[in-house]
Length: 364
Image (cartoon, rainbow, N blue to C red; front, side):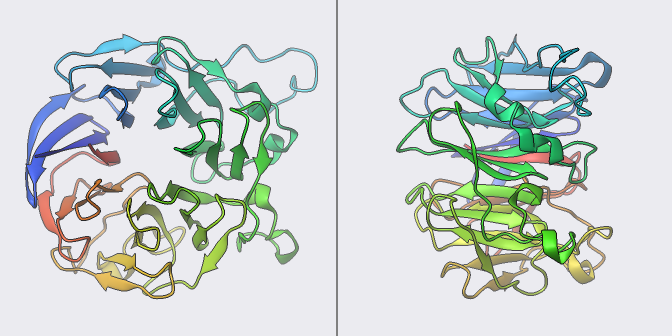
C-alpha cells in the first residue's frame, strides 16, 4: 500500500492505493490553498504550506501521517533596508508563496529548505520551528535581473540536496537559471551553461541568469544526473548540474512544466508536453506523456487511459511524480484530473476528474 499527497487549491488530499486502485482517505485544510507538501523520509513527518492571502503564508507539520497537525513558523523576510545597496530593491521583501519544500541531508536531522516567491531561500534547523533567509543568495547582485516566469516576481521552485554531501544544494529559479552551493549556502554559483532562452534576443539567449527552468529533478541512484524541463525545451546534466545538454524536442512538443526521473535509472525520465506560451493546453487537445529510456536520444509517447479529445489539462511543474519502485507514477492537472500508472507511464487510470486544481503531488 502506497500513499499519495495532493496539495490543491482547496486543501491537502491523502490517498492510499496499490497498482491502479486508489481512493481518497483524508482531506486536510478543506477550502484552503495548499501550495507545497513535503513527506520527510528521514523521520516520516509531513509539512504543508498554505497561501492564505490577507493572512499570509502558513506552515503546518504532522508527525503522525496527518492524524494531527501543528502550526509551525513560516518563512519571513527581514525588514527591507531603508539605506544601503538594497534600499532601492524593486522586489518586495515579503513571502507571497512557498513554492518548494525540501529535506536536508540524512546527516542533518531537522534541517528543511523552503523556496519562495519572491525568490528567497529559507532554511530551518529545527524542523520548521524557526527559519532564516539565506542572505548570500538573496543579496547576490545578479538577483536584481531575475524576473517572473508566469508570476510577477521570480521564484525558487526546485531544491535538490545531494545525498552524498548535504552542503551541496542545487536550485532552479524561474526566471533566474540554476544556482549551486557547495558550502551549505555560504556562497552560490550560477550553473546554467548550455541553456538557451529563445524568448530573448539572440545575443542574450545564452545568459544563464535569464533562463527559465520549469522544474528540475535528480536521479537518486546517480545524483550527478539531473533532468530539467525548461521553458524552451528539455535538458540533462551528467555532471551535477555544472553543464546542461539540450535534448532534441520530442513530438508533440518540447514545452511543458513537469519532469520525473527514474530513481534507479538515470537514463529514464518522463515529461508532459503542452502547447507553448499563451495557449497552455495539450497539443491538439490530446493529453500524452513522453518517456525516454536512453538519456533523451529517443522518446516514446503514451496516451492509453488519458483524454484524447478536447482535453485542456495542464500539469504544473510539481504535478508529476514517480515512486521509489520506478514503476508507479501519479499525475494531476489544473482542472482536477488525477491519473495513476503502474507500468512506468505506458498505461494510465483515471482516479478522479473532480479534484480542485493540483499544485503539487508526492508519492510517499
